[in-house]
Image 1 (cartoon, chains in turn brown, green):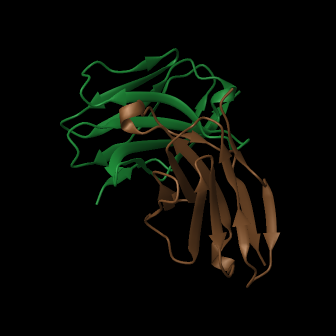
Image 2 (image 1 turned 60 degrees about the vertical axis):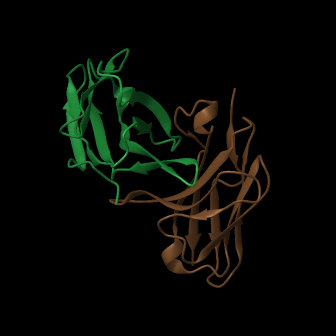
Image 3 (image 1 turned 90 degrees about the vertical axis):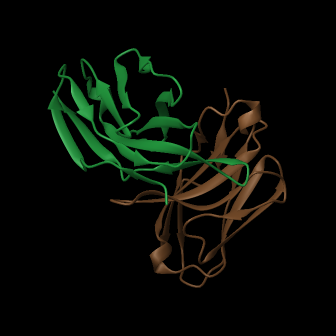
Length: 115
Length: 116
């Protein structure tokens, strides 16, 4: 069974802390994504990566950075957490188009609360 | 900018009824995919159905079907014989290629409640 695993289901962090959200996929997917989900706003893309060590900004990258040192792992970093980063964070992965893109596989989400 | 709009924030129907969720999108791509994803209270996003834009035939998966109107850029989801387990958030998404990556743009979501 293919999987995208997010390391934490719930996290509570303090304002100003550095926060790492980890995502691992076992499907040999090229593309990986970080979204945040907020009520009424749907899913908004933070960052994505189409290859190892490659990263591209999404629609709302401010306050975030990412790391992809290995194909299977894509980390989201909040350099200095703020209360407006309280949200649900979803990781997803997909094949490239030439390998048969058919949609995303999602992790089960991390609900982050910054206090 | 590519946008996806779901105009129904919430819907509620009785079990066994048929319900249709609306979605409109805007894209400059010539060949693209459209998706409906389901997010139950467990939070796991699940692919419900996928449509390839070059195919005129509407996709169907068991009780789920779509009405794809390419010219109107409309992509609605019909759930027949609704079940309690269909209660979830439903997201419509349109595919876009950026820097070689297959990116999805999502709508705001529709919260669907199936009542017993």
